[in-house]
Length: 206
Image (tube, rainbow, N blue to C red):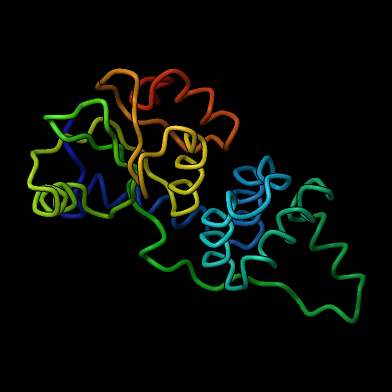
């Protein structure tokens, strides 16, 4: 695929900066998380644990409260409507999210060992060039980044959940056949499942 992004690249830095800026307002972050996670509300632990843990880090609360917030925003239809409802409850404190930590936004990547192209790791990094070197040092295998998109640790967790039935161990999954296409933008669980579909490395390109 095209050049692997690193934070030394102005274009890559701008992608991260743009998503961070978009997710800075409370309503925008709540809507983003709700769009991604509302299909997971009925899943239950332990399957949903990683996704709501990642959401809790973006909201500055516990995973259980993050799940409650996503459910409440989904029921009200938007973050704005939910916050307006809260404002009418004097016993409830004003809800604001903390600044978005830099390590929560990056490049969600799909990488495969050259010797085993039917195996893929789904992870997140702010520097894919460095992450590729680290993977090769960890595994003793040459790796290729097959696809990536700019997202958050929640996107990473949702992408992993979307193909949980193919898990080998941890963040490693089995594919049907290899493929090399560009990454896709964050789309939510159902769209990720559709896009990843028959193969982790194939699907709808951005």
